[in-house]
Length: 298
Ligand code: C5P
Image (tube, rainbow, N blue to C red; front, side, top):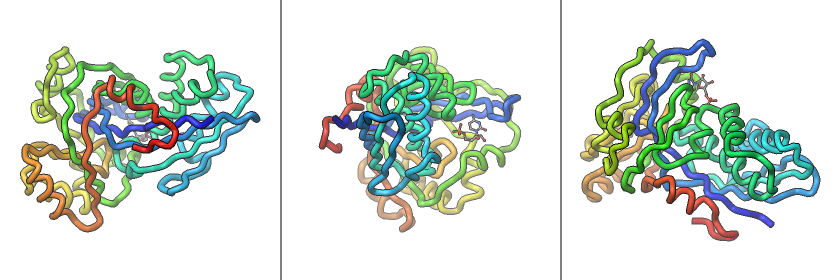
């Protein structure tokens, strides 16, 4: 029996780099937010041990270089499972886009494998396996609005923001996270912006516009990638109230007060760019929607 899961994307409403750690990673304080754009992850138990992966529409590798493959192997090994797992990915989230598509797929496999195979693995075990797979993976097990500290892998769930419409623009270039971090000028610890700090302290009902968030990775990415700069400027010119790079890019997200401004932005984007309309999802909405009945895509 195949179970289908929705693997939602994330954006970083805020991303502050606080320096380089002894392990070479950067110390972060980032605000993650689940959004409705998603991939579909089909999981089928196999009688024999092993992992099979297919990506029928393309958009991601079908071998061990895919984080979803590694996630399956790690959770099966950890649980000493005597069965295997077949994974089928249907990709919609742009790859290399700062939306955590690959990390989200890995988390969906960890979580879904436990469910479809009935593995004896605790939530804490899943979080540790997730952190070993990649700094962004633990967030996807939690979802909603959450603060990420350390490498971005220590997750503190926060009060939910009200659902909000958001536009995601893929400029059509893929960016290496490692290269963006490597190009970053030295940063030091600073206080959080007041809106983000208020949210962390339990303030509810804040809108993205009120957070005062920023992204320290934005400047180096805008300087090095003209297609990202074109998208960023087009969104600003259309009157967006917020325009921000997500993660290490290339995706830029925007909020508009008027839907008219969003359609104007859409018609003025460079031809390689692709715009997606989405909405933010609370943790409870994400959890309610992450299982999709067989055959239901959307
Ligand atoms: O953990 P993940 O594989 O997603 O990270 C990709 C790369 O991004 C890392 O190898 C590292 O170079 C960089 N990175 C970083 N600091 C972080 C997260 C990622 O330097 N907090």
